[in-house]
Image (cartoon, rainbow, N blue to C red; front, side, top):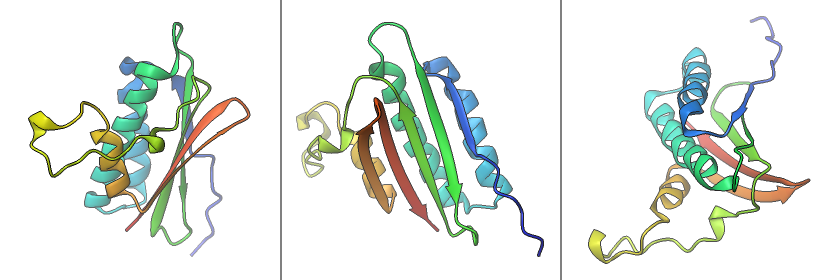
Length: 142
């Protein structure tokens, strides 16, 4: 099999809710090209939706700035790493305590469920603030 050169798989947009569809199309297209299993694709897109939406709503106080979504695939395509980067307000969503999912929905604290779902669906989720950037990395194996 001929070795394919790894192209830079990233997209940078202004972090607005209106740009989510463009980002989702980019991610879904790259996953489909590589024949990532549908269940894994669905989980990756749910994670993208959760993290991107949070960046679009909260990262930038007044003027929306940029957000970059990067995808990295292993050579055998058995996993994907998705990195979401922005230069907004420093915020580590992983520091938020997991919600008590044993409680009835009405009794739970508001918020936190989305990042909890992301942590449950991905093999690995990590955050760092470096060089003025929020960098959230997720890894999904399939």
